[in-house]
Image (cartoon, rainbow, N blue to C red):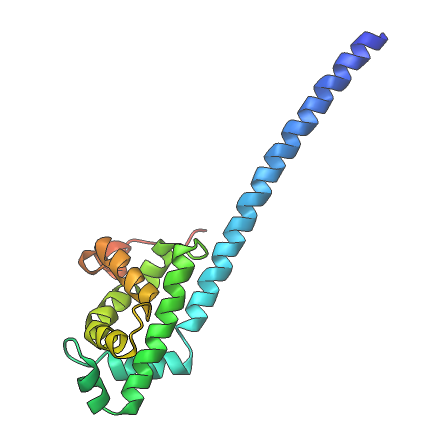
Length: 171
């Protein structure tokens, strides 16, 4: 084996090493993205399962139809506090979806219908609150998130228990 052959072999091996490094790097990036999505999903689940969220949801969800500020306040300060709590959480979630930290598909599957329904209930209250405080940015991301999920047709989708009734755990 002469020096030219060794040089060519070194170039081929070097090229293969670069290619392997690129493939490995892409695999690492994908694994990191999946870990990030899994962490976001876990955080989302935890934020929807604490006592404060559950209490606020139990107060607001049973309200029939939409409710303006006067009607909500007439129910008592605990109801307006609950609306603020729910709105704040969904506000943060909307911003995280917009920034790409949480995929909208995940939010839609976990609480999409609830988000749309809560927005429909609380919209008159939010609009009145915005006017009273002269603050049009109040709950802007909650509104944005509910409108995006509604556009995707969440409330018309087939429920998961029907859509995936034939599902079985992977072996």
